[in-house]
Image (tube, rainbow, N blue to C red; front, side, top):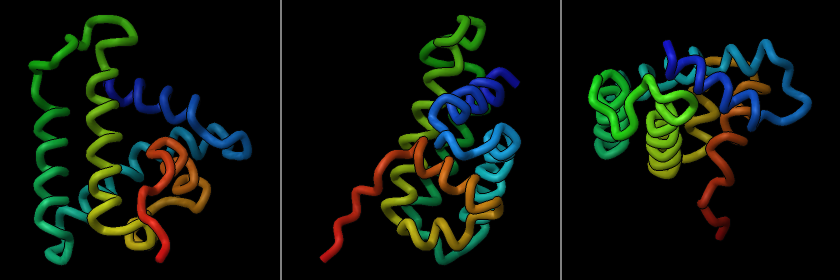
Length: 124
């Protein structure tokens, strides 16, 4: 629950100004559906699937680098790991494929992209 609220807070702070609060709150369950979709699809690269499984294990594991009961900092390690894993997955499957699989609104995807940062892929 604390991680969920912290993720919503991070999304709220990092959201583009034209994205309403409703979409900011809705992006967290959309990310969960995206992760489930990527894990269920056998065409997702193995490295990306393993990273997502590792992320889930990290999030449900009660042992953290910073305990959850520490205000603000507690869920921060979980959020940082989630962003790093999602960046890695985006690098492996591609931004267009991630966008195609996105179960939420276009504004929600724009919000996810703003949290993940600029795509490191280069145009030829």
